[in-house]
Image 1 (cartoon, one colour):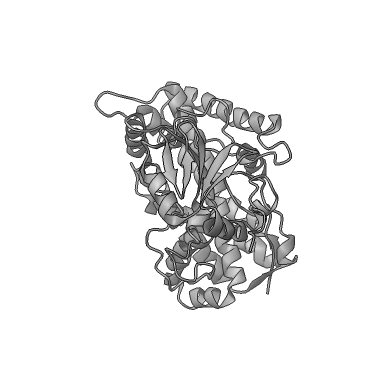
Image 2 (image 1 turned 60 degrees about the horizontal axis):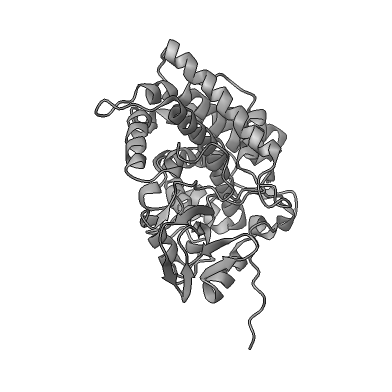
Length: 393
């Protein structure tokens, strides 16, 4: 029987709304698939993606780790460098990032959440994205970094543009590039201010972090700060949105968490496997590699599909079921290897606190639009709903 045509197209709307049937086809029929149109490989099986994420010497990030890379970013961030430079950047960033224990964030998260929940329960219909998850993540991040208060919706709009892709153009458009340039210039001014007047915040700690006499350059501070802003505002918010959507789609799991809030951490961990916002990242092959009968050539672009690997039945039983009793050891929701997400513990902590607070006040909720009519951010890397219109039931 002849195989059906390959359904994979990185720039098709389906890759945002529901990539999992496409991933399943690729895992079964073309686990190392070459897209002639876009000139890249995509790996979808857990064993292959995990191996490639670990082997930075073969699958390099120095040309950038975003599928459609932002001009000027490659080589100046944790995600777009390899050892030994990556290790230096990571050590300096960790020295700044981990200076204070993240648990001191619990009270501010609860304060912001309670204010948002007072409005939500009064109106009973709300957008979870703009009125809850983004409200928390943006406010907390701005405080941590010592950045001046911004309109949460406007700064989120800029960040979403920065991570978005123009699907019809099969790449980034000028508005998306300009949004990241605005963010970099905004942070450049803030770094300059910290040089003149240090403060007790993350940007100052990045500027002052020192290991064996080495410090980050201004460009590295700006690009690392931009990465923190993008990850803290959009990746963390997007992940919280997906946790809420999973709990909506699986009411039995939600009711278990409502009855036993300590299960939220299990729900968070299973969400990282089942529906991570970080779906795909790029690498560049540094040597020829033969995989599944295909030859990946030196210099070829290779896409590591973390979202596909996390649904691989060769690794996880019944992978398309959201099961908070599962212990998804080894999932790639935060990537793997040298580029494992540095903010993983913070992401778990913020989501756990915020979602426990949410379910305590809103144990039952439902979408006010059909599930298949949700709009999704257009991105070649990330996956997140544009809005989650809920009603308190």
